[in-house]
Image 1 (tube, rainbow, N blue to C red):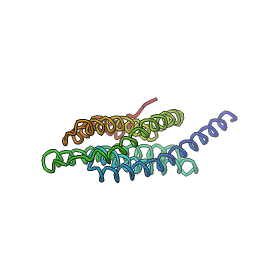
Image 2: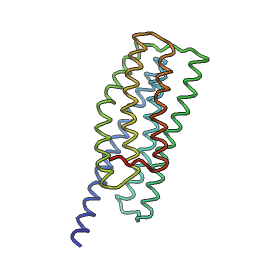
Image 3: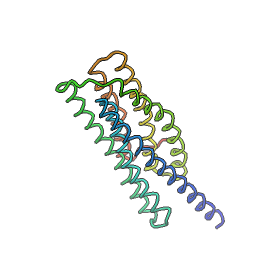
Image 4: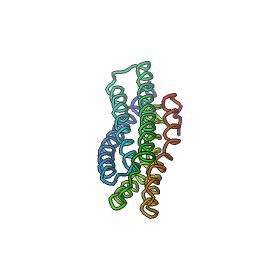
Length: 216
């Protein structure tokens, strides 16, 4: 009996931490998404715009995760309901990543074959700063989420953590792409680098939809 109480109390404590991490993610994604989209639009940078859209999609998935965690924390779900919410939250994460892939394909094709838009490399310097902040912060946040996800056995939280890890990869591509565009001044490089995001996004999306994000 005492063991069951201790386990229940530990799970509740882990849920509280998971909720705080999700709130941090929500705040982070609001700031990162708004800044990336604004600077990306000013700089005409597809990489920055894609990074901003990814932040918005992560914001959506974090809202779903917040709903799932809050219901359990308030004691409003039994085991079967918890499992159903896990599947639903994980699927939403995966489908938002698929949506981002489609947006990148359409935007890249338009800029490569129709508009030939040139990135404003002076404005995109701020985009490099955003990428550096994300590269440092997102892996730390993801690592903490994965620890809690392992203790809660939560696929949805693991999927959300993998989005944060993917964001770390995206930030590297963002930094490299923007710096290379600034140094080489090639109008097509930004769009080509954006296409390099797609393998990461497809992989993470597929695993989230199938509930295979078992990352410890």
